Length: 459
Ligand code: B12
Ligand code: SF4
Image (cartoon, rainbow, N blue to C red):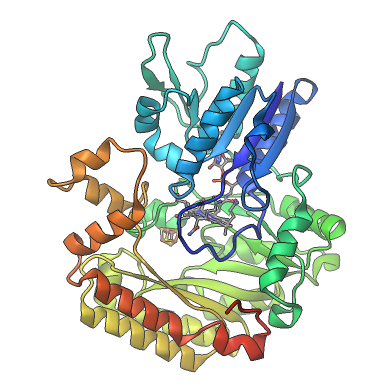
């Protein structure tokens, strides 16, 4: 059985600063799992539209084509799925967009045969088993699966399986050309820029403890529930493999919050094998986790840069965002990282619930204060995107004027929702939000750092 897993590129005009720089870990994990469970019966490959041009002939001869669907590449997924269906393949969608909007997709797109909701390893493996077992298809017992009954009605299996730590396997990179990702990275970042040449990514955990505890920040569209950590020794073995096979010197741990559990993080650092002490890291953290006692561990791990989701410089707005942080905590975190010689990457979200011109101005001032602290070579402000899966999307769905129409859609114009959100749930207009976005993004520009960091900037 020939199985193709595909990540279609985003064709919409959205900035995508790391396009094609990091391999698709989800598809790699699915392919690795399929090979483990059905190796003798399948031939599985990955096509990544972020590093290669997808031509419909690539689907010729495939029995199954699986698409990774996010809200931004979804229309491209549909176009490619129609082509693949034309060659006779069974079509499976997975990923965040399909996980949330499975019902609408099944209702509108007859050529989508199955949708895998959330983590896909177990469901895909069981589905392939059923499809190999031609004629006796029985999908009722497969968790996380949406499919059609014999009368054509879409249904979803009653259980959602969440991978256990043992099931969070090391994704093999054998299915892709790793160098093509590294080359894309190096087209933007030179060696003088951040001293690293061969970055790769992995995930050490899934989920966010803040989201588990409170429902999370209102704009967050990340779906994993329950914080789970992979085995520390397995992660270090994965890193050794990446170093030996691909010569990696820099790891981006894509987990939602690398300091979900400071205790786990400290054990992870303490268990680092000596031969991997030259590997550096890029990690995510909430600002309240950057406490004095964690700094020596960040240093020991060679954490080069920390992504800090600051979101706003206005404390009232941070409250309405359910961020669980304050501007003081953010400043403390920035200062501690600076004192330790660690870079941080502050990101802001503008147009948060109840935003005013005053609160935007507070955020601008806050970003300027961070710039004075220093230890930053990039900063980003984005306008709140009501992406399916987020609390703000649910708020819009409940809107008496446009909620009903939206609730039936599978193609979502995020730009349109951004505007609707700003108009109805903040106290500023879109143009003002855009003005502040521009101002904040100009506080630290790639250009202003070209000399000191050697960034290659396309003018
Ligand atoms: C790393 C990352 C990236 C990296 C690498 C992306 C890549 N090619 O894998 C980069 C920086 C390139 C990137 C880019 C983008 N990203 Co991104 N990214 C992530 C992040 C942080 C982790 C994803 C990950 O690797 N997870 C670990 C792996 C193991 O799990 P997974 O990918 O979720 O896959 C599992 C399931 O989803 C499912 N599954 C996924 N695909 C499929 C397909 C099939 C057939 C099946 C059966 C199952 C299945 O099974 C997998 C295994 O369990 C997530 C946040 C998050 N926590 O999910 C955001 C996230 C996925 N990204 C997001 C977005 C919006 C984007 C961009 C559109 C941003 C932009 N402005 O352009 C682009 C899109 C790129 C593209 N071509 O699709 C959103 C998606 C939300 C949505 N509803 O669309 C997320 C959720 C973050 C957020 N803002 O909330 N991203
Ligand atoms: S935005 Fe970050 S901190 Fe907030 S709920 Fe999502 S993952 Fe957690």
